[in-house]
Length: 258
Length: 379
Image (cartoon, rainbow over all chains, first blue to last red; front, side):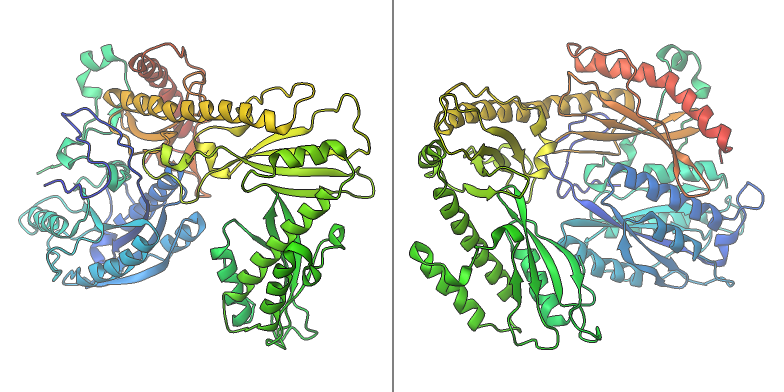
């Protein structure tokens, strides 16, 4: 994936030395778009917990973390079935209202059949203009749950008004599904629409812990990101000698699990 | 701020005032004058910044008679403030004020701002006149030496219990502080003021006591340096403001320049953390006062917040850990207390500071992990 450092910190990550450039960054308006197709209530590996349950938890953890970094970030919520629609339209930095929105998340009882992201991008572009006028940047975090339905859209090229991150939860690959194709389609979408470097993570393990870990990596401020391939966080906090001697304790989750 | 409950014409004027006045005005004590409340809210008190304090003026509209200009009630100490009757060099101002009232157009949202600005100018002139009339030789002398400085505001304060005092708000330093910090840090110009309070006495005593001095600044300057930490030069016997102010300004100038250079010292520190802690999730690029990293201990993933004060490196950064995986039933994330009990020396290289903090956190994170898991099992 290519890096698109249009404004803000353009320092190189990974191989290059990190520099904190004295360039102002903006507070974020973040729109969570949660896939509520019937596949969102597939159980995680932990019994009794569905993907949607984990998503609700993950959102609460994310919002709390993000606000502790900067209490000026704000959040709103939408859902995706065939297309996207608002769940909570007003952007707010109030945790209570996030809790209320998350409680209102519920899955559709039927399979949606398709996933058209055009309306999501339309909503996002509209809101992004408002955010920009308030000196904020706009980000969409799409949490997608379908193992065989590739998302599609009709978004024009060069309309990059917001950053897009994707978290993809899916079943293990098998003869009846195609999560790899879906993943590739999501990568294409991200590269097509995202203003700053967008991040995409996927998990087919069904472990909430892995999901939360990936969500934490999405906490990165878009204006201070490095290319995803150069991402080296979270760093394990362990004594140097232990790290050398005991490689297996270094939990480094790989990005693909095919 | 929303002004629900006001009729639209009042709300429009109030909004315009708040958004366009050059300083922050507070609106309090909102109420309705009408018996039935049907017209809506039409009375409030404005707290208007003046002389590093506030003057409180009650603004009284009448929701049922919108064409009339509002009445204004000034504070009890200002019984003698009659803007309609101002004469002398400010007579022109008096008539300007009369014109604003007689030409009142309730549909024009800019009117309240025009009114308040004019009144404040009148108030400043009124206070200046009162201070000039004070029978105190020393004060008269002081005023004559500094009144050429731009932007000074003054105020006489007295009450039944208090002795009469004259307060000056003296803006300091012509420096454009905003331009000195990279990255366009502030929307509004940051300023430093000296507040000088003289007791009013009848006779010029042989050893006049020094006035009470206090440095004050616009609130956001705190990100650069703390005004409370500035040590005021001493006021020597027999000094006057004209002598004292240049001393103070020279010393403040040095302080501001040093504070600006300390930003980069903090910047280098944050950068030195990255080989050990990875790229930060987010770091303050303008004042370099905070940075948050993502770390792990086994499969436990957590945030590491660094808070770096303007006293760095004399003062070590405070660190706080926050779980990215645990949350209480009330929706509150698990956090550690502020940690700062680690080995520290301001003379170390940044890389050594980073290593010492890292080693400390290796151990501390195990404690924190235990704490998080005890109250709630990890997902």
